[in-house]
Image 1 (cartoon, rainbow, N blue to C red):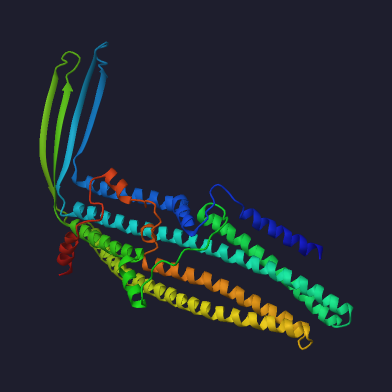
Image 2 (image 1 turned 120 degrees about the horizontal axis):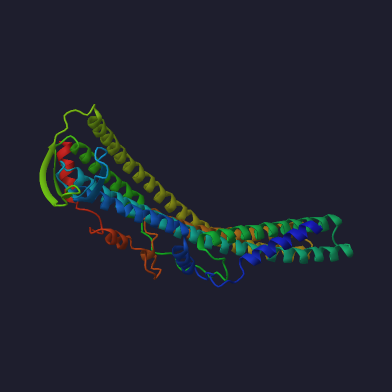
Length: 461
C-alpha cells in the first residue's frame, strides 16, 4: 500500500504546483483568451510570415518602375614599345531602363500578389481562431478536472467513513467479513480514481500553460456562452461569408486568375525605353572629358519559345481549376464542421438536462439506501453502488457542462466568429494593414474587384 500512497501524494503535489499562483496567472476565461492572444508565439510566426508576404506587391510593382544603375571603369596601360609611356582612361555611365508595355504581365502580377496577401490574412485569422479555441478548451478542461479531483476526494472521504462504519458493525457481528472486504475494495478503487483525476489535472494544467502562457490559478466560472444563431441554416450561412478558410480559398482563386492572365501576357509584345549618360576621359596627354547621351526605344515580340509559353499557360489554367475545386471542398468541409458543432451543442445541452435529473434521482436513492441499510433491509454493497451511481451522475454533469462550452466555441470557430472583436475581449487586435502601408502604398482591404471581372470575362470567352 506504500507505493500507491506515495504515487497519489506525488501526483497531488504536481497538480498543486501547476496551479500555484504566479504573476501571469489567468483568473477568468476572458483573461485566458487575452493572454493567449497576446503571448502566442504561433501567432507571431504567422504575423511575420504575413509581413514577408506584404513584400510581394512591392516586388511586383517594381516591374513597371525604372531601373537605374551607375557604372564606371578605369584603364591603365603601359606602352612596351616606348618605356615609361603610361596612358590612363576613365569612364562612368548612368543607365536607365523602363518597361512601357508588357502586355499586362506586371499589372496582373500586382493583382495576383494583392490577392495572395488577402489569402494570407485569412490564414492568419484562422490561426488566431485556433489559438483562442485552444485556450478556451484548456481553460474548460482544467476547471472540469479540478471538479473531478474535488469529487474524487469527497468520494474517498465518504468511503473511508463507510469502511470505518462497516468495521464497527463487523465488530459487533452485524455484518460479515465479505461486507468489510467489499467496502475496502471500493475504497481502494476510489483512491485509484483520485490518483487518475490528479494526473488528469496535471496534464490539463500543462495544456493550459502551453495554450495561455501561464499556469492556471483560481479559475472562475466561465461567463455566459456568447450569442449563437437560432438555427443550423443561419449558422451555415454565416460561415460561408465569415470563415477564414473560405475567404482564403476565394482569394487563392483570384490569385490564380491573375496568374493565368500574366501567363497569357508572356505571348504578347513588350516595349521598353532605355537611356544612357556617359563621361569619358582621354589618354595621359589629353585629359579632356567627353560626355555623351543616348535614348533608345526597344520592342520585342516572342514568336517561338520551344513550347514554353504554351506550357506555362496550360499550367496556369490547371492551377486555376484546382483553386476552384479547392474552394468547393473547403466550403463543404466548413459546412460539415458547423453541423457537427451544432449537433454536439445539442447533445451537450440534452445531457445536462438529463444529468441534472439523474443527480436528483440518484441523491434520493442514495439517501434512501443508506437509511434502509441501517434498518437491515439493504446490504453494504447496495450502499456502495448507490454512492458510485451518485458520483458517476455528478461527474457526467461536470463533463456535459464542459462539453456545452466546447461545442459552443467550436461552433463560433466554424462560423469564423471566434475573434477578438466578436468575443469583445476589450483589447486591440493585430492590424495587418499597418505593415502593408509601411512597405508600399496600396489598398488596405484588397484590390479592385472590377479588374478581376474584366480579366475573367476576357479569357473565359
